[in-house]
Length: 295
Image (cartoon, rainbow, N blue to C red; front, top):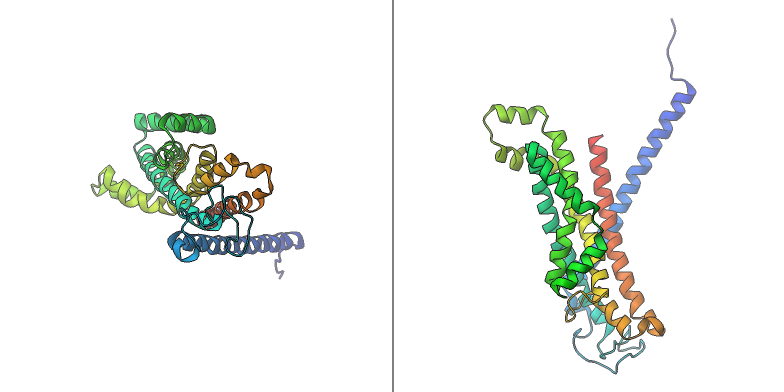
């Protein structure tokens, strides 16, 4: 009587696979925690800026272009306003723009993806050709062109970005719907007399819902970066207090050519980087968990 045992190469390969899976889970968990901590701090700044900021961001508190000191830890801008208070106020404006663009884009993308993936036929062809057109168009030149045409304002920035950011979520949701619509529970719902609207808003929505949250986070990250870029070019709200607007006035005041970049440009860029990083880490962890659950 002989006993079968796993060969050493196969055993070692299995152990390496298990170790890699464990390391991957730890990396996903660590990414999620770092992203959540950073985002919580940023949301705190956005919700209660007046408690943290020492001055009103629109108030002139010292001479223009003052270096950092005890009263103004980041110095002042060209109007004598406290840069630290302006930085805190910019958190609310930038996060608000990013989240609004994200919700509008993902909502429209989910609608397009559900209709296209479930109905198929001419609706799928029409909607996917439109989606492909949006995805292949040069993003930055068209966004700049539309922003110039509509005029500089926060509302117009939201509209322009939402016009482009829905296409990615739409294609992703459609792919998931194509996979789900052949499942037995969808066939059972059809047999019981459920119409297309009931199936899409009930059964299919529950299947794509995990993807939606990940897309909201990732689109918000891209929107904040895009809004900062447009505002830096002078296409945002000139009277608003966003990080991109701060960079625009820093460039206009010559801060990039003097030592003022250290306390005017660098902290603003760091805040944008931390925000995009936090949302990117959360979005990455969500996508990986969805991928692991599917596999």
